[in-house]
Length: 292
Image (cartoon, rainbow, N blue to C red; front, side):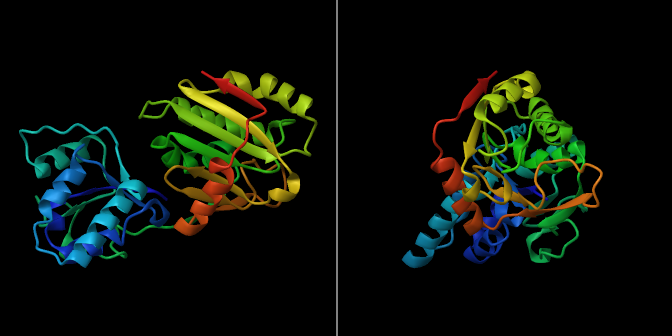
């Protein structure tokens, strides 16, 4: 649902292309731009040579700043300064494929390279599904979530009805922690897990965390658990500093019911921003915290 694209900085040589490209990217749109090379944004600014009126220049600066916040991701890909951007991007694509490579002109007639004049949202390498149906199996749920975990340092999980008795919730949380333990990009992460305060007593809840969850906490990760008033919670989400996903039934396996599938949606930017503020920005002290 979230895909990584390489974008040639030379595309941004004119404002028409710049505005056209920026409309397509953002976590809420399912597309992120690889920060390739590390100084990609500087390359883009250098490419914007066209003389712009003050209003257009201000808009360009504002939109590039928003792009940096919402869609530009550092994926730690190797870049060799003695080679051209084209040579570097093709080398990296062979090592770890991009969803597609957006270029000013096609290079080597590569099917993954999309010239800017051929780009539209229905291109088979650019099309995004902003929702999907997911089998309610712990490993499959974790696989759907993994891309958002891969490049996030702050992760918020909201599941009002999380229960630690039985395996339905525990197995999903363990599968998520397993993905975090094995991510390609290693850095310190925070996980903040919110559930309601009526499932069981706080003493039992903490005891179950110690017995069933603690040993699976990923390395380089701090995990905080919070219990909120039941009436303040309803829907289920995974949020990060980049964007968010919503779930119908939540992060729980199906237990022999007729509800074997769940629907997952990418949150639009406005909805995501509100939920991030509600949970992460306004969070109180956790009832328990684990750090490995």
